[in-house]
Length: 170
Image (cartoon, rainbow, N blue to C red; front, side, top):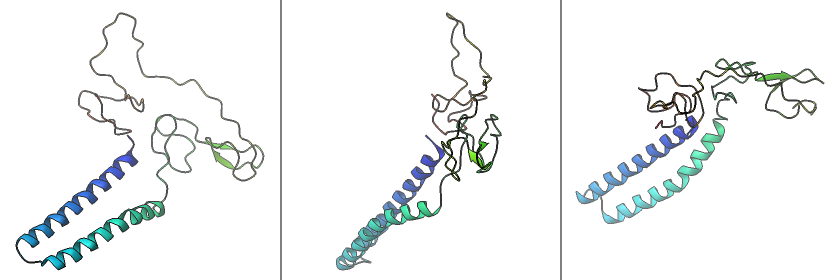
């Protein structure tokens, strides 16, 4: 699960709890005879209209707020829009177009300026920080990597969630 999914889930939880709270207050007011049944009906119609408009507003606000932050393709570390290399793993993020010499992101297939096809940068051998376990060796109780994103985790005894993607560790 990504950070964006957690943010969306948090928003849904907040909206749901606020709706439950408003309904609870209305029922409490109705039971204490502060609100008549006609007034309660009008309030419920207003809440129904609000619940129809709320998702539309949510979509508009999320579109206006812009795209989520860029992440490294290799380690999922947040990177800036104009970062040339990932701070975490060193992956090259920008390359120059051979035709117009403009900087492009490495995941682009063609230059955005002149539409020249771009070749992927050569993949260098990635050094892994893990030990190869021989056949028949007892496996450790807890792994030191995230099963979802594959990032290397340190001090896994105290972790319940991945530091990079937020997924639950078993």
